[in-house]
Image (cartoon, rainbow over all chains, first blue to last red; front, side, top):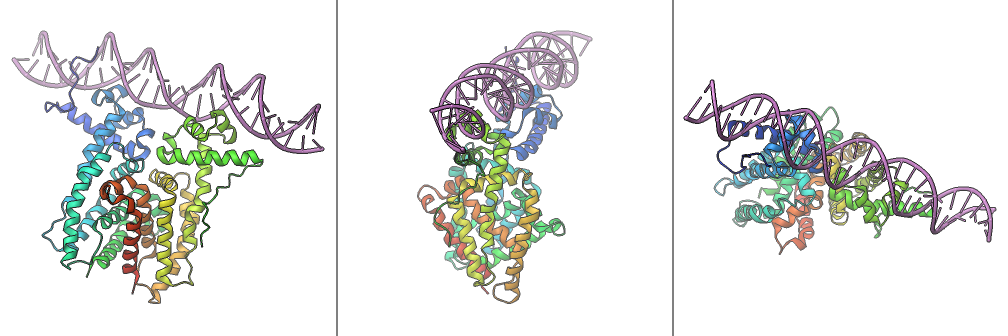
Length: 212
Length: 212
DNA sequence: GAGAATCCTGACCATATGGTCAAATATCAA
DNA sequence: TTGATATTTGACCATATGGTCAGGATTCTC
């Protein structure tokens, strides 16, 4: 027999405890998944990180996969959000630089999320590939039109807006995903300032690329 | 220039059969590790991909870890090699653009290797972190001195050479590691030309960044 | 071509891990 | 307080997986 009344994930009637425990499990799972990937993570480790027993974790999420799936979905919106903030009404170069800034800040402040998405992407993103060619593509198309509109008006240098975005994603996320490499190459004397240096470098690079 | 044939892995065997079988296992393991990571890969899958039995695989490598470790080590040299080819004697902008080209070509032709290193790096590169802060750092230091020498002579625009390298690594490897995302965003009509577009974009970007 | 060395495999083992379940305990609305 | 509901857990199970081993098959050396 199943538990008499298992909480329904999508129901709006979650209890206080459900909200708290699910949030704690998400937090612990983000730690573990970011470090080891879906496959490398174990329920035992997630449970212990969350300070819960394994069956208790399974009580709130039906499976390890479910935790991973729900977590990915919950984070996807947050992750994509900076792109939405690019406004057609602002100053073109400032808007794009502000986007670079926001993305780099996310690498600094949310490295676990960055790694989670990177791992998922490297493994062909089977769980979010529909989003990539659906919602994300639509959003990119919209913003690319804005950017290429600016280029057509001569307000920024002509540029392929989509590859510009790839380069912004790549260069900013690099500092989260490849942190060991960055720190190793910069050495002990410079690693503490790595994000400030990155900010300076990327600002200069994209300013130079975009300024007419 | 580059030899047209793929770089061959020295599997380090003594007998003919050892060399052949170890190379076949490397090839199969690269497939599996790139797709699933160390933890997600199974000996059974590597064996089946190589057309061997599991005990036979273990006969040539003592453990799954050993395959992974040896493979990583064998590929590291190949992976870093393009950087060695930057010559202080060439034309500065051409030298750096040629490096970008070589790195992008590796993303196109060796995506499995790129993903293998990316996964290792994201998981903090416990097996190669000494190389990152040792041999790789030394090589980067050497080439950074060359590049910043060019800048000091006014032959390229002033630039932080190490962050320039990070940006080259990030932007070129992005097309291998995040291939699903690139294809999803570009859509079916453009994905086939993605590497040509990338080449064009990156050439333009780094030309603009470096030209005085 | 014989003996030694190398190669290969089916059967097997120990452990890790995702997940279940009955029953105990805590929480909360009345 | 009380009964219903939600939460928690120890014990347990099935499967996957890394790895072993004895002995048979193949290849190499002379």
